[in-house]
Image (cartoon, rainbow, N blue to C red):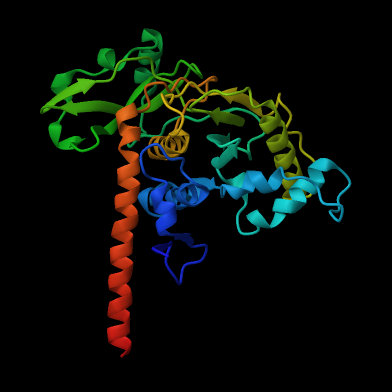
Amino acid sequence: MLIQFPPPPMKGGITVTMEDLQCLDSGKYLNDVIIDFYLKYELLFFLFIKQKRSHIFSSFFYKQLTRRDNASEGGNSDSQRRHQRVKTWTRHVDIFKKDFLFVPVNQEAHWYLVVICFPGLGEPKIEGWTGKSSDVTEESESQDDAQGSKSFNDDVEKSHMRSDNIDTDTGIFDSCLLCLCSTCRSLCWFPLLLGFKNGSLDFCEGVAVCPLCRPCILIMDSLKLSLHERVFKLLREYLQSEWEVRRGSPRDFGPDQMKSSHCHVPLQDNSSDCGLYLLQYVECFLKDPVVHFDLPLHLEQWFSRQQVRRKRDEIRDLVLNLYRHQNLDNRLGKQLSG
């Protein structure tokens, strides 16, 4: 054993061995241990702030959900029997209070990602941005409404920007702008996003839109091997059974209520990097969540292939650094107890 993450006394630790580490060599397929380890690392540490909004299932979840029936399994229907196999997997979490559920899937030695979005919502919901400035006069509202929808450049002049409000690492301006939303056709506050490059400011272009939260199931597949219709069907049935158990009432998760869609995502250019792409999809989604679910999502420019190719070394370095820290902590613990 190299490491256990998260380390004791935390529960649910993933044990990574030297054999697991070898699958990070160039041209090798990532195994389920590395997939589960890095997803857990992302959720627990790398993206701690957004942890409460998301839930990541183990790579064994979908495998267990879809395995062949045993003669001893109870339940009145196929969907109930499938749900029974994974019923305990969510005993400590209410998935319907989460915004995003991530389901890593491995089929025929190929990894891809399923993202279940807003499973607790019964229908699409438009949410307005909230800014620091909330006092808007009727005069300014009517004036802006008459002017119609504008780009950020039209609404804000550079001379009014103050560089001390800029986070130079993220390029986010700590303010908001009132403008007409092209989604809900009403005045809303929007955050001002600017690029900070070479000491100068670049203003974002485009029409402002309110976040559109839509219950849906998304597929992110770096090879586009199939249409995944069976995956959509089985996960809808799982959600329906889970709702009935959790809420004690029926709810329809059919295609009309829970849309399904294949995202346009960066694709791999070889036969071995599917696991890396899955991890990169999750990382990008959690770092910078999609806010407007107008399907299908066009995320082709999410990240570069070079970024994915670096991931093998990044994960290996992460495991080895954790190994050194855990060994150091163990040695210090023994010295103190001795």
